[in-house]
Amino acid sequence: MTPTPLHWKLVVDAHDPHAQADFWAATLGYEVEDHSALISKLLGLGTIPPEILIDHHDRRAWRDAAAVRHPDDPYDAESGTGLGRRLLFNRIPRSEKKTAKNRLHIDLHGPAGGRDTEVERLRALGARVQSHVRAQGGEWVVMTDPEGNEFCVH
Image 1 (cartoon, helix red, strand yellow):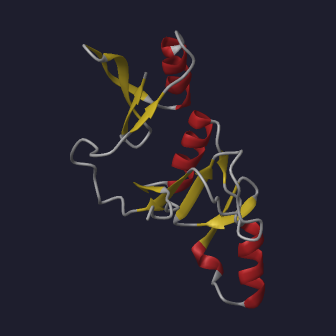
Image 2: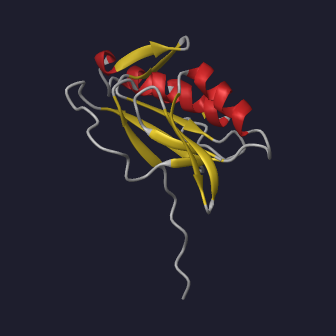
């Protein structure tokens, strides 16, 4: 019997979840999730305190979490939560520093022959180049996002 595929999301620890969500939405062409309808409903019911919220992009958002989703994937209209390809950024304390290379990272594949242009676009968004790799398997650029998480551009 073939198991039913699981729904999943990639969760990334972040010092500033909203800045990371903005960076990765711009990088991937994704949408920052809008949870403001759910937040308004929960505030109206008195089930959440306002101190767990912030204003971001002129709407109410969770203070400690932000997410991006692929614009073509389904999402729950009531909560704004994506039901497909999705990155979730959870706030961690500033005292928690990144100490080693990521064990998991994202590989980006742009248009053929467009790697250098893509690298420059990502630099303008706040990414930094770590190295340029030439190996038997190909060539790519290792970059870091604004919080130092590695990703590759092929």
